[in-house]
Image (cartoon, rainbow, N blue to C red; front, side, top):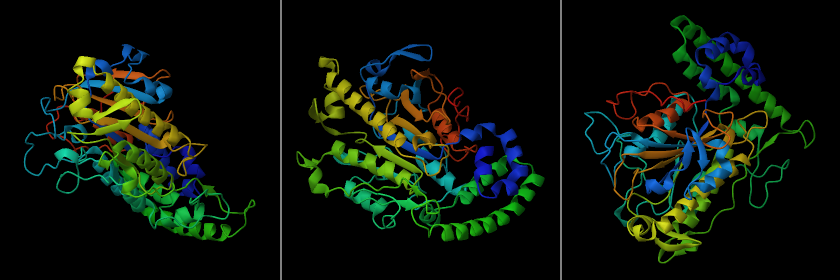
Length: 462
């Protein structure tokens, strides 16, 4: 839910919605910290004894070698572990991680939907529609007979990722962005979006407020809902007036009366798949570096609100990274690493942590066109690093682990030196935290219908 200040800052909206702002602020105070975007970072399981940092309560006193790169963004991250899935002996190919459901039978009509797909569908119900409802990227995610870890869709089936950087680029930016604006410098091959073009291509700020109000309806009484519904037509009329106003004001030059430029620069188009070849196949890590840039730009241009980046699959990921011997993450670093105390796995886990931190830094470097007061993309984005298994060496989900990240003004409860949470509750409750961060309160159509406590894990939200 927008804050009072955000409502007042919208043209005329405060006058129309004032009676409902107080109701919403009183009944759903936590919604003020609602996230606008979700980014899922998905990898294979690890070797838990070498992943866990040294802690004192919830404070991280010493980072493990695997997690050390996260210390650069310590104030934004929460490490969570110890949580079993509902099927703790599930291993390769189980969908528990993001769906809360594994190989078990859940009854007729139960669909295994991943949290990213569930959030994307609920955003649409809130009135937040984007040209790409969810962007699933990741190279070589079907190699070696493995499966991607993203599940969803109307039948709960496995969803493929886009592996080719050029295909991902064309999917997002192929014919979507307007020509570069004369009032901004987009850089080589870049495109800048004015406030007017962003308004025309996407929902206006009043559309966003309408979505929030639809969510707010769930917290209002029946009489209040009727009154609220009568206001929505007025909001639409006001939006039309706002479009006309922006249309006339954006015709000015680069001076005070000109259009406002927001940060929407699409990255340079990547090369074809042949430019990412290594050892007879696509270099997954090199491709995913480009995918990271595409996700950040897609968020900046508001092409999507939900994105996922996957490294490998449940069976295999060939790793080509400086300082790490070329090998398969699972068959090599995990199952052949005990003799060297998993030295190469430690290096690769540190590489993954570095990429997670790099995405945070990239999001922090871009102003948020949907934010206010100098907010960046990261301020309104919730990130979750999830894994298909907890213990990859022993192929089980007895202790699932996550890294959550969010801006200081957002949903997460964070700490200056990093925060650590260990819980024996079902891991699905963390997925419900993700849902709650987007104002979703009805979890009945997500996850295991028999989950004993169908509520987010306490202590995660600020």
